[in-house]
Image 1 (tube, rainbow, N blue to C red):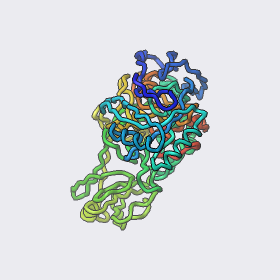
Image 2 (image 1 turned 45 degrees about the horizontal axis):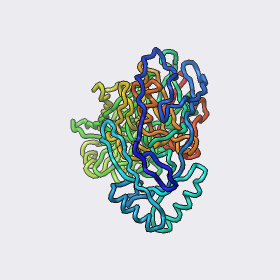
Image 3 (image 1 turned 90 degrees about the vertical axis):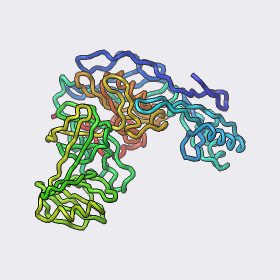
Length: 489
């Protein structure tokens, strides 16, 4: 392993190494593993087990020790904390001009299934113990006063070699003995964000975890909208990002796969057109379907065709109004608005056909009332092997692949048992989180044959019998777009 020495004579690991895991043995049921913890130096974890109900066990797992400290990282002109070697060397010269001693650190971001290895460089100043963060902050202030953009970095977050510690909550649900069901929830509306605690309490859930990403790049009042597929009780409430990981829930079964959705509007005159999205902000010339679950007004500046439950056009209206109970709205602007004016006359019928296709089987899902879908973030494990699909899912940066963050993880075992886990992070000296590779290895260790990363960071939350059992990295539980809930019936 290559190393670079920072000020103070200490060293930072500059590459990531992981100990290979033995193949997980086939099990008749889900059980907590007896092998050593799979991360870091493979310490023996401590665990506390709690029976939640028949077939569901909660494990509070702790492993590793704290040996990481702090450094000051210099930001590149792009705003990132890494760049090409020439850029890093230029920044290092600026640090020297400010009177500090820099280190140019080579960092190798490991390859994943759909993205090759990447080499980048970081500029860092000093190395201090966990107790000496204030000294790191003093150096950071000096560099800022000299005109440099910097941040104080906890080295446990790097994604490089660490001894931990880790603080993990794991729920194991035995497919043989659990008789409840799995559902997804968007809370009171698609547009609104709610805490997992709120959604779990409303449904009397035994267990709840946060779901997939929600759209933080839209209007503040609409940020509960999932980024990816959402099906609640057989109704498509958000379209898929084609090929992105997803979890299909039906009864007490869960399946990890990838999805594609198509929505088509067909007028009674036979004219068809694509519906570009469901319950989200609209772009130019787009046609978007809004359902009564949206919980917000349709966008202003277009045309709404209001449909009853059978597709009858109740009328055209200027957009910017709520979706009434028992109705749906096709909203269009530009060319899409023209289509509505030409093919959605009052009292005509416009049929809206929705299709959700499992890309692993190429079969359409039956949109029955017991079907639920939540969008995953990044695929981690497929058929028992690590297969991280970060690029396909839009997360192939150094920050997403290599750096450690709080994680919410979902896995399915060979016999269909469900594993839910939260890895706490961003808590120096207490828990370092996990990067994608570590998250995948951890889920394999737990026995998952298929696994995905759900939303993480400040969104990571696990609720068991109305109690939040993990520590959110924001300090308080964050409102999220959707949740996976485990119900007693």
